[in-house]
Each structure stands twice: as structure tokens, then as C-alpha cells.
Image (cartoon, rainbow, N blue to C red; front, side):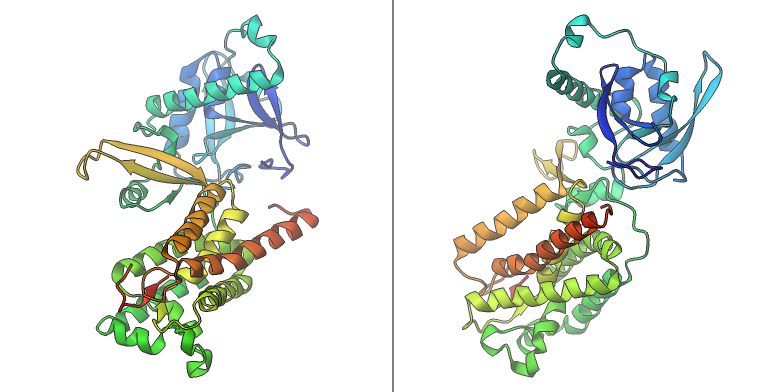
Length: 398
């Protein structure tokens, strides 16, 4: 976690029994809204701060040290002293930044019990984290947050909740892109245009332009590229484009368009290569963008490991919209589960796609360049001191 102003690594410490993150340079401190609520003697002050932060339309503050999104500047009135504090609040991860000596101006709660003061530091940290989780639920309910089971795991935006209801993971605290993801948009557009052009004859297009391991040299190997932009159906296309668009923009922004293009190419070729290696006699054409998208997903999970992905779990019938439970996982955790499933399904099916279906090993092959380059990129950045499903007759879908 970095200082929003100095960009120095923050030190975790206790301040009156609450976990705060202090900058060794400017002596500013960052604390969660729920932690601030535990610290403050007047809960209405904190609730007012959060309501004001949610009402602010412009994000003109510094970049949050946790999620790298722009923070919102809020003027908090301490009415009993007739003083104003200009604070920076992150609406995504609920962090509040205090400049030096500002945190001391917040009204204090009653002193902690002596028993807690006598506990060892590790036990105090566990108790503090437990109180923070409990306070997060209360602050979300009292200050207009999501009230469903899962609390802070649910996204604020209605369109994200709709996507989650349809089964897609949604980002909670992804960093803002510094430039437009032109390459990601262009690849998505090409996939859409190719799908429209081949919509009336998908099987013929797959046979002609799809990748067939037994005939991988046909058209001079051009099908290694053309197969990446073909899709077997509208749901196949939508699923692939969704993951490309939500993950690809941040990866492209992090690497730049040239390195990003190389990543897409390497991931797509490795996906086809691993597919052909394990089933070189396959005659069923393989199509889809999942090969290079797997590389994008892997890179995203390693470069942005602390970004949280939210999932909606529903029960009681599809129309029971009120019966839902939200869970969130860090990007790296979701990727570990996903790549593990690819290995399990590849072993269970005992095929790459020789009889049609999903080419799970191609997903693994596509992820390998993403993993390798992301780790190389992180290591290089640190050394420089920087921050860091179809039937047997149908084509296999990646």
C-alpha cells in the first residue's frame, strides 16, 4: 500500500487500538471508514463523511494507495469546534487519508478496556480486524451501502449487479486506466465483425479458417491466427469478449499497446501449440479467442493481485432476486481456482478437443505466456524501484 502523495510504502501500525497505515515521509495516515468509526467517539461524524463522499461526483483527489483509483475530496465539519477538515476518501475500497496531525482532530471514543491493552500485538490485531469487519456491515447499512448478504462484497453499480446475476464476475476496485485501451477495443470489434460475416455459415467458416492440428501448415500456418477471431455462437462470443474487455483494458494500460500485442500473439500461439502437442491427429477445427484471453487473465491476476472480483450466488429460484449471497475473491485467488479447474477438466475429459467440446489444455497453454511475462515484468519493475460446449461434429470452442 502506497502513500497517495509521496508514493512511499505505508507502515501498518496501531493508533489507539485501530489499525492505520502511516507514511514515513509525510507522516500522513490512511484508515478504513470502519476503522475510523471504531476510533471516533461520534459515529454520526463518520456516517456524514461517508455520505458526503458518496455524493461527490468528481474524483479530483490523489490516487488511492490501495486500489489506485482517484479519491474524492470531502470537507468534513467538526461542528463542536467549528473546524473543517479536507479529507481524501476512496469510494471503492473505503479508505480515508489524513494529512499529518489531522487524525488527532477527530473526536475520540472512550478509552479501550485495560484487558485489551494487555493483550499481545497479534491478538490485538485479530480483534481489530474482527471489529472492522463488523463495522463495515453497519456502515454499509447506515450510510446507504448494499444491504444484501455479503455487504461490501457487492458492487454499487446496478449494471455490475445485473452482470453478476447473469453469472459473470465483476471488478470491485480495479485501478482506473490512464489511457484508452485501443487495442482491446479493436480486437473485440474484429471478433464481432468476423462473427457477423460468418453468422450464416459458422461450420463452413470453422472448417476453412479454424485451426486443425493435423493440418496446421495449411494456408502457410495462417489458421493459427484466423482461428482466434472465429466463434461458434453468440454466447461463445459474448463470454469471450466480456473477459477480454474487463481484464484487457488494465493489462494493456500496464504494458503499453506494443507489449500487449506481443502478449496476445504469444498466448494465442501457445494455446494452439499445446492443443496440437497433446492431440496432433485431431481433425476437428478449433476456434475462439479464449487462448489469448487466458494469457490476459493470467497477467491481470499477477499484476493486480489485490483487485477483488465479486460473484453472486443465488438460491430459491431464478425469480428470487432478494435471496442472493455475494462473495469476493482477490484476482490471484480467482485465477488459481480457474486454472485448477482447467487442469481438472482436462484430466476428466482426457482430450484436448479431438471430439469437439472445450479445449481446456488450450486455456492452460494460453495462460503460460501471461504467467511468465507478468512475473518477469514484476521482477523487472521491482529491480528498477517501480510499483507496481458443442457436439462431436462441432468445432472446439476456446
